[in-house]
Structure formats: structure tokens, C-alpha cells
Image 1: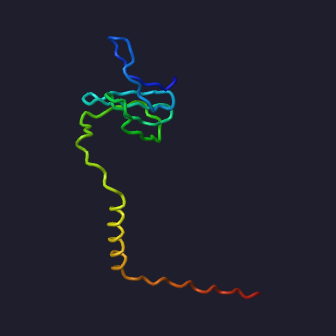
Image 2: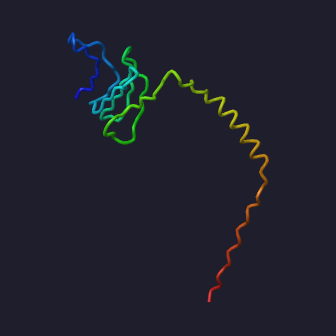
Length: 122
């Protein structure tokens, strides 16, 4: 109910580390079967992915609807992912291609509206 998430050593009965970032009550929790990751989601609808060794928050995503449960894929591999490309480079490439596309298009004339007919009074 307080939104606190922690890694606990059950043999020694002590808290190893706290996983920060929760804003409210945590309603769903899932541990990855192979990687040291844990996912949590609370009433605030934010899905948080924590790394267990360091306690660091890896990702935080807002969900449009309240989930009923969490499930992590065993094929999830953070090290194999390529770093995201910078958006500025992509925009420039798209912009240059867009200008060439617009320049190659023919101009279509816009039809003029017909003048309205006046009704004569009877």
C-alpha cells in the first residue's frame, strides 16, 4: 500500500537494497527467469523495470490501461540491442527525401467555385 519495493535476503532476514521509483501502491510484480530484472506496475499505471544487482531503474513506461498481470519474455536481451540513432540525423535524411519527392510531383489545378445563382423575387 505504500509503494515500497525492496530486495530481501530471506536467510539473513535483512533488506539488501531498495528499488526506488514507485509512486504508489504496487499491484503487480514479475521477475525475469534468466536476467537479473524485475518488473513492477502500480495504481499509477507506470511499468517500471529494475535491475536487481544495482537497484537501478532501467525503463519506465506509462500504460494506457490498468494491467491485470505482468509477464517477462525469456528472449529479452539488453546487451544485444543497438543504441538508438539520433533523431536529428533521421529528420535531415527524411527532409531531403521529402523535398525531392515534392519537387518531382506535378501541380494539379484547383477548380474554381461556381458563382451562386441569384433567385429572383416572384
